[in-house]
Image (cartoon, rainbow, N blue to C red; front, side, top):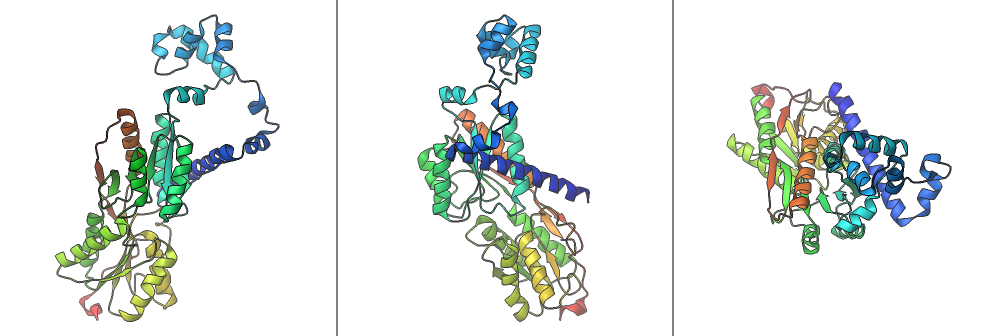
Length: 385
């Protein structure tokens, strides 16, 4: 249960980031939005302290105040003077005018993050890792629920570019992605997270999908399963195609051939729709490997509709280890991906790219881990049918 509570905390943190992003966009599009929200808020409406006022109150030059309030330059000011300036600034509620400073420097300290489906639990820890790393470097994310249509994604990016974002993290890409080409043409730094593209044009942080499928198949074969099916994700995505290929290679390694059914999306309903005809026509299957956990939940739904039980009648393995997969019934055996670390690394790579101006393309591949729970069981040779 400890892991589930942690997952919930990560989810709530990510929701907070999303709401902040929405608020930022509202401010940009509807200036009256903040007036209504902040009406009567004495903190928001209090006079704004300036560097000159702090300088007059402390008896130093404004440039000394500016250095003392900049963590990177504070060492240039005597320690007791810097402490006095910082204490007074905090008591006055001083906030640096980052907009003016960034206009001078030609940056915004804003990073766009595009997700294909904000309701998909896999993106909460990714976003949490991104936010953690960006905030440590003084950046803030603007999150967009961009869907899977290229035209809509490009429209979102055009809006973000109008906000002078410094870079983009994309979790939306397909194998041959139009948005990636658009970003390259605009000269905007881009990092791909969770998915990659076939043309290898920009850096990415992904999981080792081939190894993940091998872990799942090896686990089932070790339990005695021989007739194994795969509910694949959309083959237009790297995760769908690579996990399908990995499944087939893993089965071939054991001298086996599996049944593959492609789903229309990474959703629970899509998993049930892909599994239903397979369960009706492939009666000798004893196990299913799904391309993600939501698809695996759809497989469980299809089994239940047919009066079949997991794992008694069929074993099921998911992929991702999304939050709360340990409390579903039965607890889901799955392939764990370190999504939070994936988010951290993608954000660090983007910040490094922005600061260095490097065009080097790098790919980070994280090792997945098999998590065995209650949705798989060993079978006897007599159960093969």
